[in-house]
Length: 461
Image (tube, rainbow, N blue to C red; front, side, top):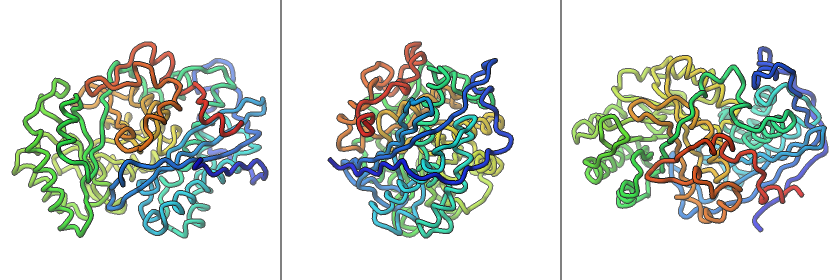
C-alpha cells in the first residue's frame, strides 16, 4: 500500500471571521426557510500516490506521480463526508516544484490541506463559499512559511483546499437535504451556470512527448478539440523553434481533417503555453508562423501564454487568449478580462468549487466564455468538473460545453481508478465520438458526485 496516513483530529485554531458581503445560506438554493449552517465537529485527511505511464511534461518540467488526497469533515449531527483532491504542484506553482524534490513539494501541499482542516474544525459557516474564503488568506501565509517562498501563488493554496471544499459542499448538502448539483448553486452564481447541455466535448491533452501519430489516432477516434502543449524547454529562441516545428508537424498531419462540430468545419486548435512565453513579441512570431503555414484561422484558444507578472494587453493578437493559472480568484479573472483575455479556463478541481463559481459569474457578467480544463484528475473529480462544464454557456464557434480530461492518457492505473467511482459505468461517464452525452439521468444524479466511494470511505473507517 503506497498510502501514508496523516489522520489528525486534535487541535483547534483561532476562529476565522466571516468574509463580509457573502451571500447568506438562505440564498443557496432559493429556499424560503433558513438552511442549516455548516458546523464542523471533526476532521481527518489521507493520501495515496498514483504513478504515471510516462513523465508528464509542461512548464519545462516533468512529473512522475500524482498524489490523490482526501479530506473528511464530520458535522455536529454525526454525518461525515469525504472530498477528493488531485494535487499538482508543477501546475499550481512551478517554483515550488523546481525548488524541492517532487515528493517534498507534494508533502508541502498536503500539509496545507491538513492545516486547513484544523482551521475549520469546531467552526460554523453560513456556506462552503464562506468557509473557503475565511481560511484561504491565512493559509496562504502559512504556505509561504513552509515552502520558503514569499511569492507563493494563491493557486497552490486553492489546489490544496479542493478536497476540503468538496467535503464542505457534500456535508452542507446532506445536512440540508439537498440532493442535486443544481440545488447547491448559490443564487448569486446561478446566471453563469444555468445551461443544461446534452453534449459536452471531451478534450484530450497532447503533451510535449506525445507523438503526432497519436494525435492523428485521436482524430480518427472522434476527438475534434485537443489541447496541445507548447512552451517547450530551453531558451526562448529554442522554445519558439520547437513550438513552430511542432505546429508545422501537427498541421501537416491533421490540418485538412474536418468536423461537423465547428462552425467552419475545420479542426480547432487549442494551445496551452503555461506561461512560458516571456514576451508578447515571441508569441507574435509563433502566430506569424501559424499564418505562414495556413494554421492561424484554426487557432481557437491560446491558453496562458505569458508569466503571471507580464501584464500586457492581448486584444490585438487576433486570437482568443485564455487565462488559467493567472486567474487565481474572481478578482484576478476580472483583471485579465480587462487586459483583453477572451476566455477563462475554469478548474473546479484545482481552484475549489467555491472559487470557480465566483470566477464563472464574473466572466458571465462580462460576456467572456468559459470552459473547463483538467488537472489530470481522477475519475470522480472528472464528474465534479463536468458539472460545471455542463452548465456553462456554449463556447463560441462550437455550440457545446468543453471539458478537458486526460487522466486516461497519463495514469498507469487508470482502469483501477475507475472502479473507485461508483458511477463510472453510467452512459454519461463514457466518451462517444469525442463527446460526453448528457441526459436527464445525468442531471438528476449530478454525475454521481453525491454517491459515496467505497475506496475513499475505507480510508476513514
